[in-house]
Length: 594
Ligand SMILES: Nc1ncnc2c1ncn2[C@@H]1O[C@H](COP(=O)(O)OP(=O)(O)OP(=O)(O)O)[C@@H](O)[C@H]1O
Image (cartoon, rainbow, N blue to C red):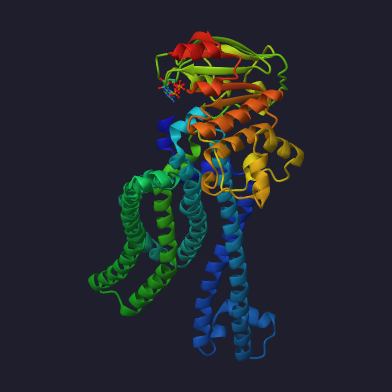
């Protein structure tokens, strides 16, 4: 497979991957854009080609009658004088050029719109792919890489692959039209142009392409590093400031970006290379013609005509060849973008979405039946044969030393991880991809550091729902013991809570997490060390909120280190090295530490 990919040319691969990204309607639009580009390029060449004879005819009195094409037009439209004929022709030329400019500008707009839309589709496809990652793969890839792949890669795809591809297509039509015109007009000249321009172009492409590729691929590796450091710098703002460690992260960003800008400078020089080489080759062409005439002692008027023609052809051909060559180098240099776009496409990093989702009811019990789980590439069992039955409305605690498997067990219950053996049964129905939506609707999760957005309390509870259900919202606020606090605020639930809830106390943050779970009408609530980071007084407040929840129809699973958090539990299970080693009552645990 890899061999096939490496044998596939850069342009062919770019076209193949782009085609996969296009919807049928966009494919049709792509064909239309191509046709318009061809028409636009032909008009461009035609406009320039007609200018030459017109200038010749204007310069020579009576010239109109010597040129058979002009003569035919003159007679067909019954012109009375050469002067009126030439004025009409010149006005016609101006009108043609104005129309051509309007048309080509419109084509440029259509091209830009098409490439912009395709760039947008790449962002969409990347975001869909990455938001569908399994929990495991999300953690493996890390947010720096994911932010880069979701925003920078599509942007770069637009500027460094898509636009060069379109430019290459239009410029090829221009170059081809000029070459065809020259073949008809003067085959020797075309031979000369091929001999002078093609070898240096081929050599430039060979020399520059691998260098640009190396540079671009390194830049692509550096961006996630910079993003990772910036992310840490601002996420850990308070801790890093206190520890006077911000400079380390600023330094990390600057080191990576410093290298990016150095590489960018190299890239800039490489991108100028094709133009310089083509200019040099054109001068070499003129010199060769002159040398040829000196050596062969050919007449000077023929020489001037040949040099003039060569210069005229090269004048329009050079920018086209330059853009073709630069586009080829850019396309080749940015092949890593295609790796990024093709990566994780339809592999097992994506969560399996079952097309038909089954409903799920939780009215009786939740059974963990011989649950066994190992992390990928790890030989030990993080969970080993866990058997637990939890009745609806029970409150169950989990304890165990650090690393005993408590969070892993919760992650299996949340379906972030899938067991290798055993199953989780809800009212006797095994959990699987076919009922994951229904299960996620039933289960809520509050962890040590509740995720909070820079938004209002209301948006944090509803996770930004546009038209939240007010009744459910008030109920969630009340049940999570937030009502007194929210009522005391001038703007109530519309109060903004600052960066990651900085305007809230630790207890209030956790209660927002609980309110969020209640708002979505959770029936099973997992609290994983939800009170661990709180001081005793705040923990008491949150515990009270949790205990109040016992009044409502909720099954609660609590992972905790502090015994006080487990006071209201019906049973407490103890884990050790991934195994269930004991079942306790809260009072037994208290006696054990006395
Ligand atoms: N992504 C992972 N890859 C490999 N091993 C992991 C991974 N996550 C956790 N582990 C390992 O699995 C075991 C159980 O970890 P887990 O986080 O479930 O423990 P825990 O009981 O919740 O600990 P703590 O009380 O410290 O939170 C540990 O040995 C841990 O090192």
